[in-house]
Image 1 (cartoon, one colour):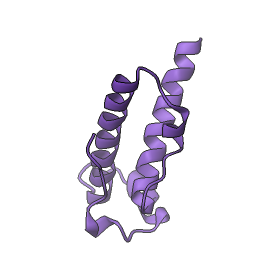
Image 2 (tube, rainbow, N blue to C red):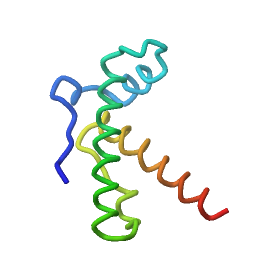
Image 3 (tube, rainbow, N blue to C red):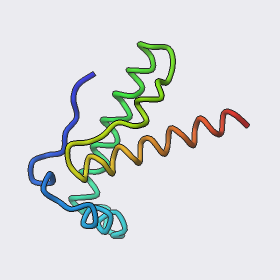
Length: 90
């Protein structure tokens, strides 16, 4: 598992700026592209972690980022994981 961090040019952004960028219909929005990169990296790390452990540790769903853009990306991954788990319980 390799550490995934936001590129330095995105680390200073406020959460509201990131949220606004995610609502932008332009798929080339650099902030949205960075969120997608983070989500992909966190998802890959999560899958590797689960493969090594053989289970989903609840603590991984409470991970925190070091800046708002990382926090948002982590929340998106955790939300997707929760939805997948809830779907499996049905």
